[in-house]
Amino acid sequence: MVTKPGQSRGNSNVLDLPEDPRRRTKRRWIIGGSVVAAVVVILMLVLNFSPILAIKNVQVNGNTLVTDATVQKALEPLHGVPLSRVGTGRVMELLAGEPAVQDAIVQAEAPNTLHVQIVEYVPVALLIEGKKRSLVGPEGQVLAQLSAKAKPKLPTIESSKATKDPKVFAIVTRVLSELPDKLLATVDHATATSKDFVELTLNDGTLVVWGDAQDAALKNSVLQALLAAPKDKEAPIKVYDISSPQHPVAR
Image (cartoon, rainbow, N blue to C red):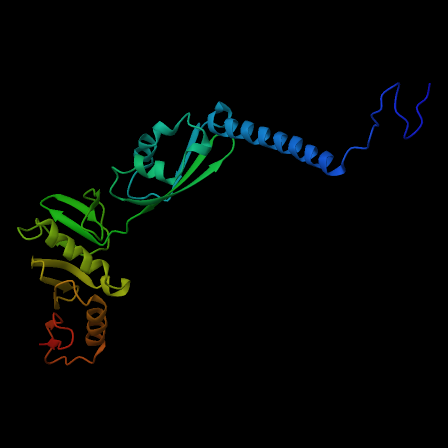
């Protein structure tokens, strides 16, 4: 027996009504969302735990003060770790013992290569302690030891009782770090008797009494103006005192 539209099947008084389109659409969205969620979970598991994307190769560049071997040794714990679980923070933790390293830029390359670009501090002076020579950074930190053959074009700082004080030494390197590159290149060496009294000796023997680390920008401007002023060959200037930059003295 064929049931006509609108007629109940058998002896039932219940009619088959068409499904609400909104309910059907909702069910489809729920099913689709569940599939997407499942795929996302699977991808997260693969990215975070699968050995397929584990680090096997670390490529390092940008380093000159710290050797490749040193960096590679420091980053050895990263081998076998999934790429997605390694970021700049983790790399910097492992390189915390390298004073020359200021920052790092990390990039992952599937399936198993991590690229690490090292950003190093720029040396501002050469510290001389007897036969020992070291490159130092703007905060007074020793960045690297130098061989006897290396001859960097940087101002020197002779170790003394005053410069052995970390605060005094940091002031000297800070003063040097704030000099424009062109002016820094004219400095032969720097000395200090206290954190308030820094002196710079230029390549031509001229002495610059810098004073403390305050007003660096103004002192730079004043010194450059004094150096650019016409010179009297019969009465050459031997000292520029810019410790009070508002009232500089040349003698």
